[in-house]
Structure formats: C-alpha cells, structure tokens
Image (cartoon, helix red, strand yellow):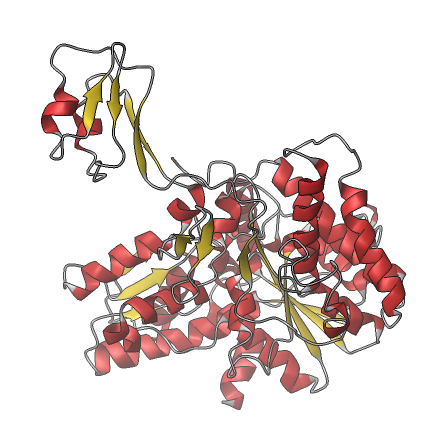
Length: 513
C-alpha cells in the first residue's frame, strides 16, 4: 500500500481541513480580536457552518462530525486538542493565543482521537482469491502454524501470527495481503504507536514533525497546529511584515497563475515585502560547498550531509548520533533568508510560507527563532486568500522576482540541493570529485545512512529529504507533486543566472562575511 497515492486528490478530509482554515481566518479578520465575547461566539459557530446538516455526511452522527471539526478549529487557532469538552467549552484558552506572536510548541502534530478509526496494525489476511488449493503451501511455510482452513478458505490466526510474510510469498494466487495503518506506513521514524483503545498516538520522542502521517491518514485524523492566526493579528496591528516564500510555491495556484501573481497576492494580504527563499538556498549552497571542501578534502571526513530539510537532519542526528558531525551545520534556506531581512529591517516580522510542517518546529529552536517569527503552509495561505476574497487571476500587475538563482529555485525537488552544491564546488575547486547520493523519504534516508555507516556507499555528498520528490511533496502543498515538480523545473530555467555564486545578493553577503 502506498500512502501517498491520494496526494493531489481533493478528498473530503482535504475539503474539511481547508474550510476550517478559511473559517478561522474569517473570524480573525472580520472581528476585533480583543473582544473575547465576539471571538468566542465566532469560534463556536464554525463547526455548525461546516457541518450544516443534522443527518451525518461523513461519520456515524453529526455530533461526532462537529466534535472533530471543533478539534480542527482549535488546532488551527494554535490551541491544544479539546478532547470532547473534557477541559471546558470549545473556545477554552482562546485568550492565550489572540496575540501577534508565536504560540506554538513542539507538540504540533496531533492525533484527533474522535476521528481515529483504530485501523489495524500490520496484519496478514486471506482474501476471496483463495482457491483452497491441494498443496496448501501457505500452511507448510508458516513457522508458528497460524494458517488454518475452513470449508471454503484458508484463514490466519492473528493471535499466533508473527508477521513474517512467508504465507504471502508462498501463495500461488496472491490471495494473502499485508496491510498496516496508513499513518504508520508513512512514518519513517516509527513514531506512530497504539494506545490501549487501539487508536494511533504519536511518540514525540521519535517524531521529527515531517507531517507525512497527516497526508496519509484517509480519515483526516491527524492534524498540526497552525500559526496563521497570530500572523494575521500581527498584520492587523500594523507590524512591519515580510514574507519569505519557499521555492515550491510555483504551480500551487494552478497553471494559469504565474509566480509573480502569487507574490502580488501575498502582498495584498498586508506584507510590506516578499522574498524568495531561493536566496537563502544560494547562501546555503555557498556555505555548504566550502564546508564540503574543507571537511572532505582537508579533514578527510567520509561525507557531508545537506542541511536544508529539518526533518532529515533531526532524524539523522537522533538515530545516528555518531555521524551527527557529518551533517552540515549551515543555516537552512528559510533561516538564511529571514536573517537577511532582519539585518536589513531590525523591526521586521518574518513569515515563512511553504509546504513544510517541520519548519514550524525548526523556527522554535533558540538559534533559529530570532530570524523567523511565523511559519504557515500553502494550504493556510490559500485559506487566507479565500477569506480575504483575493482572486489571484484578477490581479493585473504581477510582482517580478529575481532573488535567487536557477539552482537555488531547484532546491524544491529531490536532487536539487546536491546539484546546486556540486555546481558551486566545481566552479571553485574543479579538481574535486563530487559523488552524490540522495534519498527523498525518511525510510530512504535511514537506508542511505546505514550504508554510509557500513562504508558501503560510494558517495561523499548526501542529500536527505523527508518528503516524496523533495519539498514539492510536503504536507502543506495544494497541487499534485508531478505538476509542481514540472513548474519548479520551468521556473528554475527562467532565472537570469543558474549558479549560486552568480547571485549578486550572495556576493554582497560573502563580502560582508
């Protein structure tokens, strides 16, 4: 089973999630957020606006549907889960989050218990394709005698089964299937566990906030906390707001909306300026290429791992602490871009807009927090467009873009980071032999590091990405991965220069350093 097969499909869980974002944004934008009574009334009404029928549409009853939507509303506000009213009314604690500053914590990815359908964990099951063949190879290969027979079919005793899969391999009719809960399949660090009721829970000691479980759950039972409410309040207060936009923003609004129109739309929200994070990608490229040269050629380090994906870096340092020093310590593109703006405008409030949930966690780190104030996803941005009635196709003047190189823009796709670093290394150190290995899932990243640890990997520059095909496959995307990948490719070719070393803003940064 591939938990990513539904990516890009507009499913019911996606529809509900986006409606919640839009309704929450509308409550904030249309009301005085200092009027607690008004805000509480607005929040309390949202579940009834989204679940309008008394007859259930998605679940057993409309009461459960509204309870789940209520949980989503709280997470969108930046509040902890409601847990069915265990701690009071749905708006309990709202006064704590109605402020123009970050309220997030590391417990940002949450399982909504009311929505979890207690999917079975890894299980082998005999389907109707069983022909009751005379050979019975499934039972012969089973090491614990867990396969038995009725008059019509083989059956598996799951109390005895050790999940070895030998029966599945032996069946000539492919009548035995193996399945697991989708969120657990999608999680590359085994952070999805089961509570005593059978529901999924997240082990935060293992979780790296990649968000793949959110996209994989077909019941929409997993969601992350948002920061766009606090960002909108900062805009309403007239703060000096700047947005920095991840390279994967192109194509998110469809093929008829150019990158310049998306940037123009972001400015209409209330941002004084918008900058491409591809600038920060160019800075990271220059830093990492010199770090690679020093560590590989001067210090004989076996390899250098890229730093742009916080989920990959977190996973690598947790699971392979003895190789933590092999991962680049460069600022990620998000942080480098935020730092550029903060140095230029000390009172600036910086919002990163991208496909990533792990960036929300990254911005909480003490060494990163001074440079990025808020992190929102493309989905949350789209909800703000909806609530503010901003139609990107109606904008007449697109904003020109020239912050990053073509290779910096290419960071959004798997292989793009390593390619950019290699281009830079070969420009200044042509004698070097750069050998690249890449992985675009946490499971793949683990395998890559295991091979590196065993010295069975013929590579000295390792690129790790937590999401399929890179950032274009992040949990906060709006458009299908293949289409966005194609748009990123096209957009990177449109840049007036391709190498990071050609970026005039980066040349200024190098001189300052």
